[in-house]
Length: 262
Image 1 (cartoon, rainbow, N blue to C red):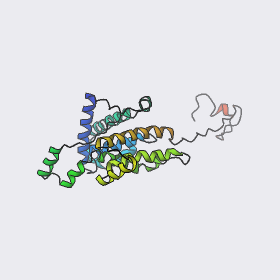
Image 2 (cartoon, rainbow, N blue to C red):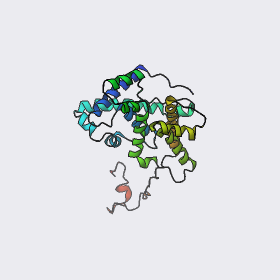
Image 3 (cartoon, one colour):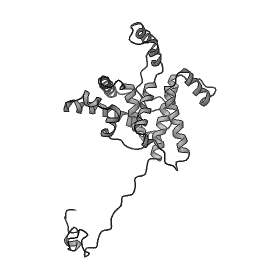
Image 4 (cartoon, one colour):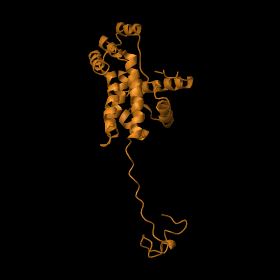
């Protein structure tokens, strides 16, 4: 396995801005957190088609975006921040790079890792309960939830064609790796027993497996994206035929004239 390249300084600035923006949105919708939003974006960029902001913002953020960013300059800055992170993920999942180096782990999800001292501080301070801190130990779980929420919101885009054959099974195998990040300890143990017999994968390895699965999904959808129906083009009348608009003129004297408005 090849580790992802370290983030550039400019990337770190963009990630910090994205984190601050998600914190602001989270005050209007408690579902929104940096890790969740990053997973949501990743699913949108993995799927079968390009989804525009006008389509995903209402599903992802509801009215939180409008409530958090009301003034036009504020909206423009917020969109710039969102698209900066969007473009970073898109670059990590660029098909040419994935095909050129299929064994390289390119995807760098934003997942929260809390060390033992910080967990104890959160409990002692009363900021989080022991159960809530235990949830933090499932690093990557919130990212996976965001990924799966995006699939639910755009379920029609994740339906394989009826003639996809083994691709449908491959799709499910990849999604299983993402879902594994949401499992509790017992669920993870069962997952490892069933799909990784004889292996003991830690949390970091499970996250790597999920990221590789997402990279595979990106290429899978490129091969099985919905086909665009062919555009129907009406036959053009001959220059001396009557114009189909019903004017009574010959086509060359009406809609077939050079520079005519159609």
